[in-house]
Each structure stands twice: as structure tokens, then as C-alpha cells.
Length: 280
Image (cartoon, rainbow, N blue to C red; front, side, top):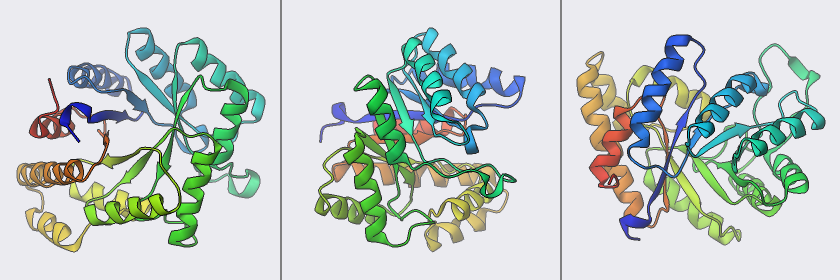
């Protein structure tokens, strides 16, 4: 696949402070210079950042950015969800990242999870093909999955419901991704699956995220990062080289593009893009 066809996108999370919001404006402006396909904005457990996400997405859209909100039912009923989707449609948003989401801590069993395939079906039922719909995929398998095969089956159900493409959880073992794609092919999944890419910035945070999300850090990488301790400069150099090489391997083996988990920072993702020669 030629590099001209490689698509990439950037993900943000909604800041909780004014300083964070100001930083995000700078971040999005700088990353937009790299000409990504779109930006996405995450959605907290149970829709806990819904209004913040809506505000950021509509503001970005009004300023001419291509932006996609993450969305899950959370604690919302169908009418609330229809109202929110209507706001996005009226704002000119034409892309959604549809997720199962998580129930907020402390809520207990009072809410029932609504799975991503149900959300996809709901959006298609009420809005037809207006929105391009992305869903999540897990090359190293969702931490709550009953089995590898069932996880593939659940992904196929999302596509059968009307999803257009998938974005994966981040990973550092390309063979896990290649095997996953093979199994998706065997299951009849023929829609694009974009690797999620997490730049390595802070090892302690990365280890915590990975333990929570079921993303594996290969032992040799973990040991190398541990050896740097608090030497952030060495961690950044090692991480940049490692993730750039990972992306090159994925491109060489047919990956359609990348979705970068930016952590609301410019340089880590931008430097990888530049290493790959994907910036104009």
C-alpha cells in the first residue's frame, strides 16, 4: 500500500480544567497542520463527560475541524440519545465512534450495559447512513471476553449492525495484530480495521493503562523502560523509535492507517507521523 493512501486520525480526551482546555486548543491546532483524516473526542464512563465532549466537538466543528465524538448509551434512555445525536447531526458532525462504554463506578447494577452493536443498530435505524460509524476492536482480546473466538464474533456483530470500520486498542506486538486480522478475515469481516497507536511517554502510566485495558507490554519492552526509571528523555527516544518501527511494520503488511491516542499532547504523535513520512 502506498503511503499516500495511509489515513491517520488523532484522539483527545475532554479536559477538566481551563488550563487543560487552553492546552487542547494549541494541541489540536498543531496536529491539524499534519492534515489528519479527523479528530475524535472520548466519552467518560456512563457518558460522564457527555456535555464536555459535546461542547468540544461542536466547537471544533464550527471552526472547520473534521471531528468525531465517542458515544455510548451509558445511563441515557433512547430519547436522550436521539436528542444528542440530533445535536451532532445539526452541528454537521458526520462521524461517530460507537462504543459499549462502561458503567460509572458507584452505580452498581442499576444500569444495564448496551452493547456497541445495539448502539450501531440504533443509530442506523434513526439516522440511516448520515454518520460514518467506527467501533472498537481488540487484537489482544477484550479483558472481559469469554474467548478469542467469541470476541471476534462480537466484532462481526458490530459490522453486521452497520459499522463502517474499527479502531483497535493499542498494542506493541505486531504479530498479535496480524493474527487478529487473519481471524477476522476467516470470520468474514471485510471492513477496514485501523491500528490504535499509543506513543510511549510515561512508563508508569502506560503500565497502569495496559493492566486496566488488557493491552500487553512485551516483557523486553517493559524491562527496557524500567531500566530508564525517571529518565524521561531516554523513555521518549526509545518510545519514538519503537513505535515508529511498529507503524512501519504495520504499513508494510497492509494496515490502512492509524488512530493515535495523543493524551492531548502534540510531539509524541507528531514525531511518529514525521518519522513515517506521512506529513505533507
